[in-house]
Length: 312
Image 1 (cartoon, rainbow, N blue to C red):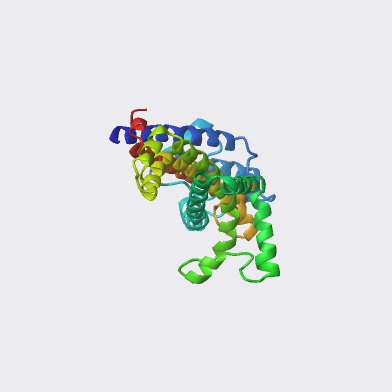
Image 2 (cartoon, one colour; image 1 turned 90 degrees about the vertical axis):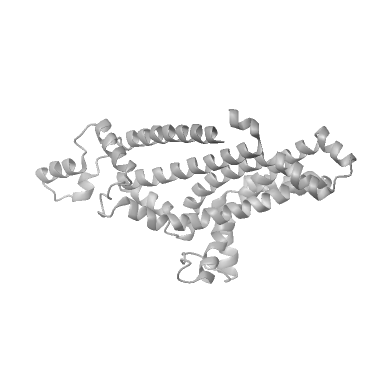
């Protein structure tokens, strides 16, 4: 396991550098925001001075190495428009997006694995029903589901708030109420994906000879399913859950726009529209780190469940 951890950490570090270098290079192609920062009344001298202050008069490679050196120390720079440190801005917004993505992942994993196992074990009309619902969940866009939920449960039936976010420190009850609709909107498609993949994995395990042997020996059904079938199907389920979490993290950014939630989504959108490069890079770094961390945890869990993975 230690060797697996070292290999995955080394690969994650290289991937992080490659992705940030690529994004940094792409951001250098956006229009110069200096005029937008200073306004139309700025003089030529002010324009040149501001470019020098922002480092825009230096080569892209030099600027990236300087940014990378600061980022390694936890300094992501300051916003070109607000002057607020990027790390502070992201720290304030990240818990909001995480409040959407994490509960949605937990709900999706629980329901998806449960429905997938049920479909594989029962078969018949239960299996067909789960597959139909999974197809519908794949096909319906999350944005459309979000709008439908707002119309039904916030407008026609004013049970839940249509927009906004309440922190848990202000009111735990209102925090839960503000999350129900957006979490539901981004979780529906993931439940379908996890259920479909879990069903296939469990059905494949159930068809193995050793499962039939254990059944013939009278092993209790619950022990057989939990200790043998689910354990061997778990790597596939964990992999799809991790992929769905990554998708839910991105989906949460989109759904934030529908529910007017001030998370990383609105931050990224506003920063990109005005070419606030330090903030855009900070959001990208956080997203990449989250993806790499989730993949690392899943790799370790799969390695623990399947010893053959540790040697890859």
